[in-house]
Amino acid sequence: MAIGDRTDSNNKPWTFNVTPTSFQIPIITTTCQAAALSNGSTNIDLGDYMLADFNQSTPTQDVTVQLKGCNNLFGVDVKITSNKTTGSSNDLLGNMLTTNAASGVGVKLMSGSNTSFQFIPNSYAQTHYNFNTGSSTTANVIDFTAQLVKDGNTMKAGEFKAAATVLMTYY
Image 1 (tube, rainbow, N blue to C red):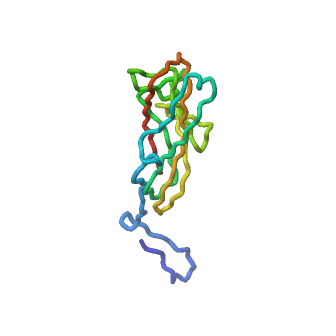
Image 2: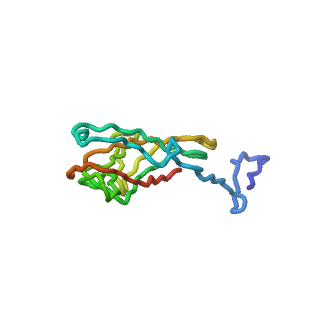
Image 3: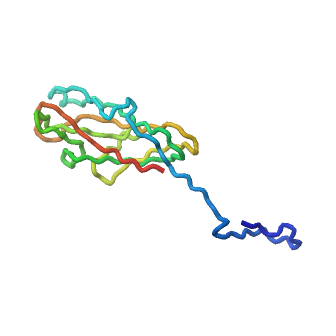
């Protein structure tokens, strides 16, 4: 890269001569070393319920996913996928069990930062979390709320297990 002649007597503005070999912009990728639930597990225990408990609002469970070792992280877009859904609009995580399985309920996942946003499994809809780690390596958290709710089908007592994949696009 060369800069114009600073000794020029006619006060011309400085000029920059840029060639493909002299012009470089370092691009540092956004990376995270790990994403895990804050308790170190991959399971969320929503508790035990009686069928009568669903006549009222069931309790919510806070879920925290911790992003570790993130460099240059400014934001994360999050969406959820699942092989088993339920609810009138397939908007809940469904029970994967077939033996002694509970029915009539599903897991509702909400964004912890915006509890009015419900994650719809397998939808293009996503929510955005803002961070600003710059070039430092810090831990960031993504908060969710999980709740076992009625799905509109006939309820039956039994075991319940749902699974979801959390997809994160970070930048």
